[in-house]
Amino acid sequence: MAAVRVRVPAKVNLALRVGETDEQGYHRLGTVFQAVSLGDEVIAEEAPPGEFRLAFQGEGAGFLPVDDTNLAIKAAKALAAHVGRGDLGVNLMIRKRIPVAGGMAGGSADAAAVLVACNALWGLDTPHDELHGLAARLGADVPFLLLGGTAIGTGRGETLTPVMSSGTFHWTLALAHTGLSTPAVFKEFDRVSPPQDTEIPVGLLEALRNGDAAGVGASLINDLEAPAIRLLPTLARTLEIGLEAGALGAIVSGSGPTCAFLAGSDAHSVELAEALGVFSGVRALRRAFGPVPGAQVLP
Ligand code: C5P
Image (cartoon, rainbow, N blue to C red; front, side):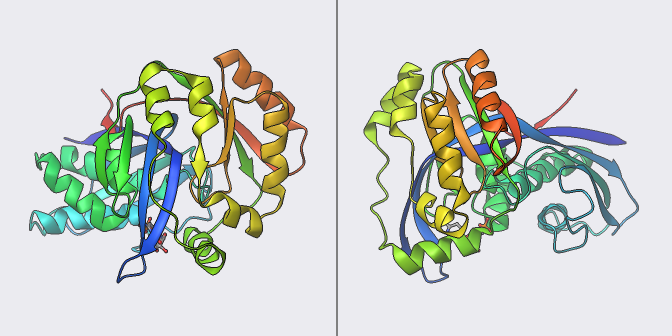
């Protein structure tokens, strides 16, 4: 195949409970992921053996590394090594819409998309469980971006159980002026908070099953929200403005700083974006819906 195009979603954590650390310093998590329609696109083209190139368009282009330190290149090389083929190469172009260092797993999403794109481009037919294994070694969020939909994540977040969810949930996403480093937010959590129990609220799962947006909004929980706010205090005001404007729920997404507001409808998400747009602490607004599928080859 000469070129393959893959679309991949971003994620919002509807619940993110942070427990103890393991031997490697990773935290035991209990999380509920929802894949949302704000996504990136990866175009993979054939390249000469051993050549792995990467370029970006859109969000963060010009700032993101395009060398071997980028998870997208690591993903392509990991797949080539997994199948033991030294004759493979790829030219990757990533169209970014997912905020960079925003707590929506943009880098992990690109890695998941690259695994799917290279698997198709190189005609490998790698079984799903092997792709999942490669994804988990690349990062805790990468497996979920392969799967998509709604799922509980345990372990480091890589052990997934799909969750029943009805209907469509509408989100307004408020992007901040700066990014937050995920390790820094976990460190701030460790500095102040004792490990939490990693239980997922039963009410959240019930509300998802019933397509009850108000119920989902009321049960959103993120143990990383307080540490993210300590590192970037304007987030507290951002969350407040969305709630004052009638959001069904407001939460820092993952390790932040993107704030996610649950709306009752598409029209309501426009209203929330208008209310948040006047606050100087917000760089940009996006609207999205979920759940959506994981990384998929486009026709
Ligand atoms: O897995 P990933 O590389 O995306 O994680 C980024 C960082 O987030 C890790 O280096 C670690 O500091 C922190 N992390 C953690 N516990 C997890 C997942 C991530 O402490 N379960």
